[in-house]
Length: 354
Image (cartoon, rainbow, N blue to C red; front, side):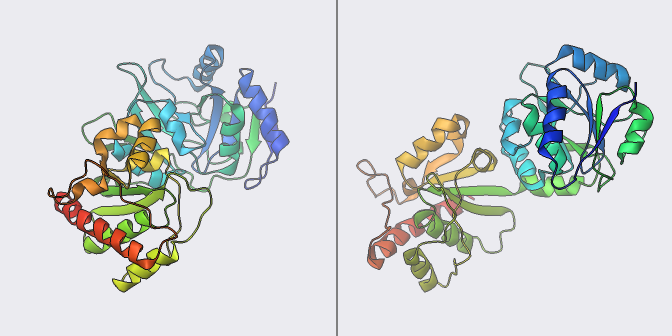
């Protein structure tokens, strides 16, 4: 029996076609689908019969695992206990895209490969399946990976249930594979990503500064620290808020105080604290104990990398009663200036650590 072929729009995939294929996968079927690199075969990784069938048609050795796909960066957290900032720096820069990361698995001695493809059809299919999706390339082991649906069906016609045809893959070569189970991340299959790009990304240190709305305190701290670190290409400074729901510019007070110091922050836009931002940061500076505890609640592993910014003030300052930096929002410029002075003094000590 020949494989059923469905033509699907590469940029705006039809929902009914995605839903049809997702149902087939949940029922143990196999579906050829496009990514930006090559065409792959999707199967429910939690279904033993589907995985046995996938191995048979791929002619793959039982000891060689299949990579898994995610539709969001945070999906990586489901598959590995690894919380190294290096991993999250790399995926935050190159996902979605032609990058597969190899990480320690949930069980001792196991490893897992994970990728977030940069193709609307692939992302919609992963999301719609609501299961862990194994997705090797749609070719027999040892043969070239297919760039088109037609090439995939040369090996797979009649062996899989459905093929989604969205035209040629834009890249046409398999993803780069970076192994994070070694002492240093290492490319074990080079695609469009090189070892130099990996090294540059994972070696850059990231400082995350957190307040509530990411419009006053953390903005002043971010731009003041950037100013102090001028010329330091090895450090990136970002800020975010624990209660950001819409994107907004910095407050007028923060903009005025920074402008008085020759710093232009008009391009700033607030962003929420996310698991990825926290996971990739080498140092996290919070304005208050509440911010500190809020991050600990969803990312307890970040504790060793977190600090209350006010604790970097001179030892002569007594923090026993109030270790928080007060929010100047809605206050006169004098309050903003006082807040900026506290932040500025604390950041001098931070720079010494960096």
